[in-house]
Image 1 (cartoon, rainbow, N blue to C red):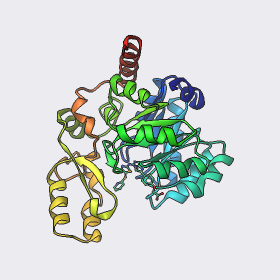
Image 2: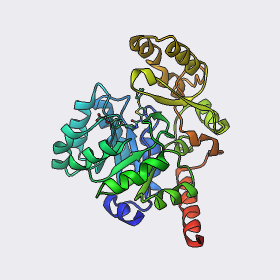
Image 3: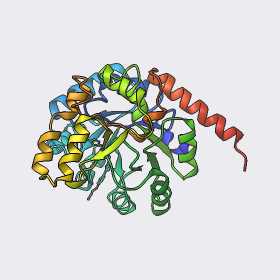
Image 4: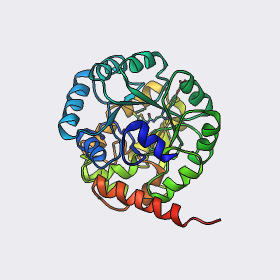
Amino acid sequence: MYADICKMLNIKYPIIQGAMAWISDPSLVSAVSNAGGLGVLATGHLNADGCVKAIQEIRERTDKPFAVNIMLLSQFADELVQAVTEEKVPVVTTGAGSPGKYMKAFKEAGIKVLPVAASVAIAKRMEKDGADAVIAEGCESGGHVGKITTMALVPQVVDALNIPVIAAGGIADGRGMAAARMLGASGVQIGTRFLVAEECTVHPNYKARIIKAKDIDTTTTGQSTGHPVRVIRNKLARKFEELEKNNASSEELDAIGRGALRRAVVEGDIENGSVMSGQIAGLVSKEQTAKEIIEELFGQYKEIMENVSI
Ligand code: TUI
């Protein structure tokens, strides 16, 4: 039930903002939390010092609960975990790996842990390791993705687990929220729609590209490296595709990928940078405040639920 996750996380709406490296900073996180959702700080681009500074800034901007995401492929994962446990943040989400070895430290600090899982087997392992809820993320999502769609993944994870499941991937309006609820989800995680929030500090070129995007504009690169990433198709993505077709080594691909997200997010180079985006970008049509986004989403969701018939 959506109400249960609100109670567990002490938030007004069952809407969690997806962590986006370089993008979900204290400005976006505090805006989402102040609007009654759960803002999530991305730390994929930060070390422990940067993370602690960002947590302090969030706390200056909001007294509402927020989360910190630990991207487990980060070279700083160990020190980031230490930082969030010392700071005793209310909630941690994790991505791109299993947080098992950190679970004890999170629990001892009284932190609620919501790992992202992209398959049933990994979701089950996370429940066993002590997760409070699992975020089931379908391959419609932007960034690092698994192989299964949200529609197929969420009900299978719901049936396999006894803890709440948050649906993620391909959700950007009240219809998506209602659909997730029908699949048995206890809440939703939304990234792409919050990319165009007024409080989101991503480069204006990036926002404009998301707003312009059509349904078929994303692709996944890096399949051959074992870390597929969903991005808007551009010059960089085409270069990746070409190299992968020619069996380039993962070192070569990594070298091209390095710094690419920063190039798009900070410098606004949306042709040669990595413009990570979910497939739902085609539905995202205008810039709004985080509060407007959340209230519109929940308003649409409520209207659907009140008028639903067989
Ligand atoms: O983590 C994400 N999305 C991301 S992270 C990111 S930064 C990045 N940049 C370049 C290359 C790679 C990453 C951009 N987007 N989403 C959560 C997510 N987690 N999706 C899938 C998973 C996942 C995958 C494997 C979770 C657990 C897992 O476990 C593997 C295992 O064996 O335990």
